[in-house]
Image (cartoon, rainbow, N blue to C red; front, side):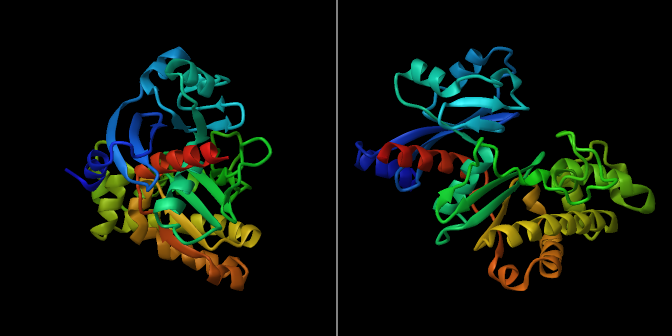
Length: 312
């Protein structure tokens, strides 16, 4: 029995919120208490649903985070590229109707930022930027302890900062040269394939299904192709972060997501670009750190947001 389960057993009235992180591939859910302890948890594949009510039945949670743009005040999913049946759907209202309890809604990268600030690498800071390196690049911005969503709820789209705007790789957002096409797991795979002809001896040539994880493992073993890809990734990441540092002057920049597994291969390259491009004082102030809570960050953030809203 873990500590959280023991706490629940010893104090059955402990305050809990049920949270869910709806990803394009997996749906994770957990119960979280006010101390940030995770109790029961489940994980299964996200339903390949054509109708939004099928997603509602699968979630049945009180605080939900989704990969896309949301209107927190109205509980509407504006755009969810990986779960398109939710576009324009009043998800919070549907959950409230299903469960007869109030439900909250938040963007997944925003929730991850809150989770890392509450119980992760951002503890003790009040102004942080959280960058999630996954299939794409997400971001969450917390200014003086408050999550910054912007006027339309779309703030924090760090993946779409232009780092190579003229002649850069096309991005799914319609622009070119976005950070997302140079610093995501998808970008790592593409850049590896592009650079492969220059490294005919790389073991990655024999990889049947190339993934960012395989590139990382190859880099750890000293493969020059993989090391070049992560060097390039880190440089572009540093270019984007330098601009954020100049504009927002954060205490910490927290790097999370699956592609952050390559931290030791790209972090120093990112720091070099920050030092070269950002103003010296804020560049020295901003600590570049790796996220601590992994997949739990979004669940913890969702819980913290739900507890905070209930107190208002």
